[in-house]
Length: 316
Length: 136
Ligand SMILES: Nc1nc2c(ncn2[C@@H]2O[C@H](COP(=O)(O)OP(=O)(O)OP(=O)(O)O)[C@@H](O)[C@H]2O)c(=O)[nH]1
Ligand SMILES: [Mg+2]
Image 1 (tube, protein in one colour):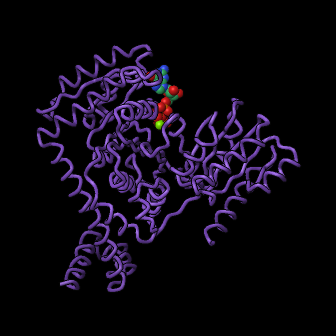
Image 2 (tube, rainbow over the protein chains, first blue to last red):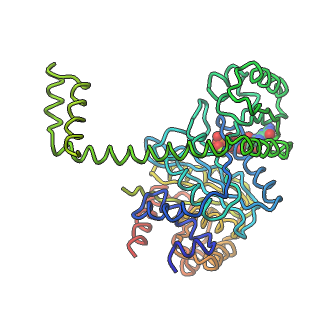
Image 3 (cartoon, each protein chain N blue to C red):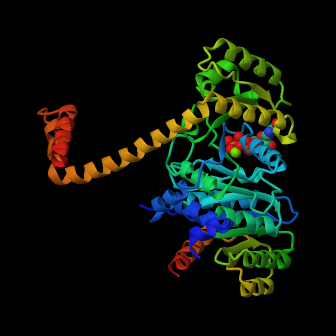
């Protein structure tokens, strides 16, 4: 049986091999994804982001238990950073995941960013496509611990949970980090810690005062104590509420279309850039152009315009 | 353009509660360019193999100090067989007498490192072994 056939039969090992194929961009991975794309559309993607140590993995762990109890099949992708110096990575999110069924209703994969800086790996979205095709009801995606806003999560998920803790500081800091704008649901975790009630109130007020860019949704702030599983049901309830409101208002669909369009352009851009570089480096002496700029006889702007002209002439 | 990395799962089965040693090894592996999945303490053989299959690792490294190595290693090997994942390399470390070591390596554990062995030795071993298995 081929790998894809085994995947279609629901074999976990086949899913694992396909995830690796996608992640490593091994030969044929695009065709494989092409095949998978024909079978997707049934999974919702929940993103969890926030500063390092806020409890993202612990929250994900609790959400998974809750979802499994509701008879959902759940996949998780947890991303941790690749060391820019060694290319290696310590993927530790799995430590918080224990006592899960092995009947195929749960799957967890750790991913390293492998050089990507947006909080996810460049293949995270593709891996989520594989999860969708495999038949999970929900995919949870945990980003690397970020202090500043990382936008990849919005382009990859249907709903974004931002987890903060009392130690993360007040709402002003959260706002400055840009986390305010990306949250569909706020989670103030470690509510057992001092200052928790204050930051909840603080966030609520700032959200109230801030110009709410969405008239169809008011971002809720949920206090949780993930280690004890406290109010995780409350958090999940808000997440699901967001999804149903978004669906009703048409925002869910609009967002997905927007994500796909963006992906399409990004892929095209990659191809065009590659093709252009291949062609132009044969048609023009880039080193001479650089010489000219250095000598003051040209500049990067006119040089790139000329190169672009050369390329468009060659393709027309 | 493929970008393969050596992926290793590190686990600590059994009940003894120290993970300092395994964390040092995890850091050394990362510095060698590996992707290291750390799964924490008190993992059962079934949990370890289940995680290894999901993470599609090249190798599983376990540290056993509790003296239960003659049951835990074979249990992991059995589980690997059960899941048709015998191609995953199993190696380990801990305080393990020479006789047991020979016995375990005969059973299918690829390599047992004695405490104090330089981590560089394990890194070189994994690089060679993963390469060799890829060629098969
Ligand atoms: N006091 C308290 N500690 C918590 C709570 N939730 C999580 N923690 C602890 O916070 C620490 C970090 O939790 P993780 O879930 O690993 O946090 P994370 O955001 O995934 O961390 P990174 O992935 O490394 O960014 C762990 O020691 C957790 O046990 C909570 O509600 N209260
Ligand atoms: Mg985490």
